[in-house]
Length: 256
Image (tube, rainbow, N blue to C red; front, side):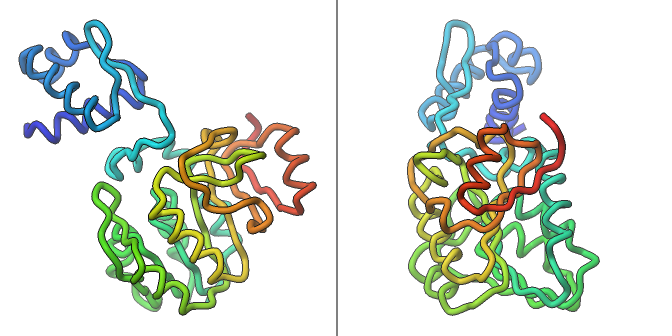
């Protein structure tokens, strides 16, 4: 196993369990404890982990850019529930803008029975997922590839997105807070998502329950720019009242 592969697995374990122990990791991967300590040093320097005596704990700072390959495995049931709810909103022939989120990949998988869709996206993963899809128009935004994200960003991506007038845009975020609004960890992503919001008639926020009450580094927008929130678990009564006051519809999967 390559060191990079091992570190990815360690990071997945950190995300699932919030902490790891050097001795246990050494046995799990069949390497020395010194090798594991070097792996944890690397994850620490990248901001993913915080070293502790005998191991490490997850750095749960919202502004850390976790690699796409790891993020796509988080809360898969929640993403699938969100995708199912959104699929019911999509009509044959819709023009849809999708961001480069892991939820967007689940969404396109749930739309396979729809006809004549046009998908505009800066997500490499979505483009790959739809590479063999017949009867749809798949449009890449172009732009600069963002490492670890399989996403295209920058001025060229925004210029391309701004040239469209889509029926729906479906966005995700890292945090949703009543005072600070809707936020992401990276300013380049926020800029692209702001352009997406201005390029579609209906604005849909797809956000799982773990993002509520959290604040990330860069604001995408305030709530007056969102028409609909789709989430996996019923929000608190406080949040439901807040959405009602803002004139935002909220669809959810199940009771908390």
